[in-house]
Image 1 (tube, rainbow, N blue to C red):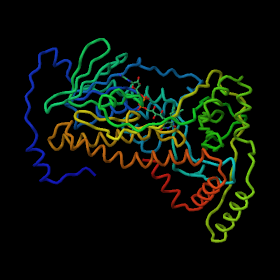
Image 2 (cartoon, rainbow, N blue to C red):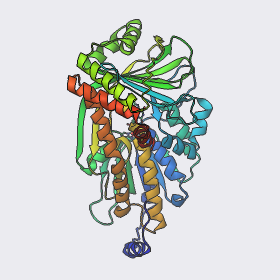
Image 3 (cartoon, rainbow, N blue to C red):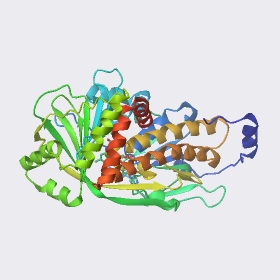
Image 4 (cartoon, rainbow, N blue to C red):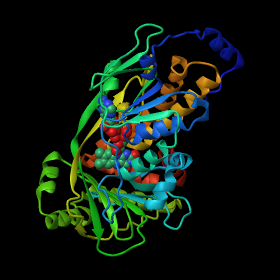
Length: 458
Ligand SMILES: Cc1cc2nc3c(=O)[nH]c(=O)nc-3n(C[C@H](O)[C@H](O)[C@H](O)COP(=O)(O)OP(=O)(O)OC[C@H]3O[C@@H](n4cnc5c(N)ncnc54)[C@H](O)[C@@H]3O)c2cc1C
């Protein structure tokens, strides 16, 4: 993917300026090859990946994190913040050895995913409970961070500063300028390459002055830890699209699941403030309630179903329902705003954006952090290639490869997620009819379903 011809390599080598920089002792102490600003799931994992990349073993790396070092204390109580990780992210965490710590603590496997529409009969399923292949893995955010942090401690060319907030970034204007970072305590650090992993409100992105396309969704998310009314082989992730937004259950263990419920800000406010018993009733009602249906849509979807059957398409619309919820973990309810954001450039001289700093999506497809992990895999490869070719790690032609490659994947994924949000946030009958027929057709066409799963897995 990033292979270059020998001739272009020679041209690159020829162009590499031999710069000799003289530093005083204190300036040397404050200079790093790479500084990563933001040590959330993406920043910490990026630090771990680059730190373990043998091609970068002579590069000094610094990770700055504004928050304190998070300690994951194992208790029976699950954290209410969990993520669904795709197989590519799982593989990366495995390669970093972080998965060993997760595996030794806890995680859940999703073998089957069922998505269905509340206002029509349309339903789609992916995967099979008895299959060997896993669709995704559910892990608590804090556990993931803890697992990666354990590995960071073994990396000799990496330093981590917790409780350290970058206050100002001064980006290079001229050829040999470096990135200068001023911390809140007034101290300054310089680096050849700054990697902005500071989340969707990224200050690094603002310093780059890149265009940022953004909007807020007219929805917020409410999360909680749910207790199921019966013990089950809990390997199915469920998502029902209601007229007000999707409600999803992600498995945690045989008796518990994690809720992510998107709803209007007014409804979320009510849901957060009602008693826990009322909240449980509201969840069961959202999953089981029969919504009023249009006769035209019913007739059309039934006719389409018969049509698919006539041509022997596999239309097994065996819709099932998750077990009812009996209670929620006390105090586990929390609400989050949802928005869309995309930086038109992920790179500029001496800087690259990674994770939510570059792109933010609605969590209805569980892709947000997975896109960030995809960025990590790509950037790690690109920086390794730059070193292999004798170029500097901030060589824009290599960073451009990173930007191009990731935007090729991120932009269509983000547009598809935004499209899904708009398609389902609508109860106009012709739109409901179209999306129902589309879902039925996709469900019947296994090659199309396989393509969807393949795309979401990388
Ligand atoms: C309800 C909900 C459910 C979700 N579910 C999923 C899911 O199932 N699957 C999925 O893939 N994604 C999911 N996401 C999205 C996912 O949570 C985000 O994509 C992910 O957290 C982004 O990680 P990040 O490290 O890029 O950014 P962040 O998590 O925002 O981390 C940024 C870090 O930078 C630090 N920082 C900020 N400014 C500075 C500074 N100036 N100096 C130093 N440090 C700084 C912050 O302290 C923070 O630690 C979900 C999101 C929500 C809200």
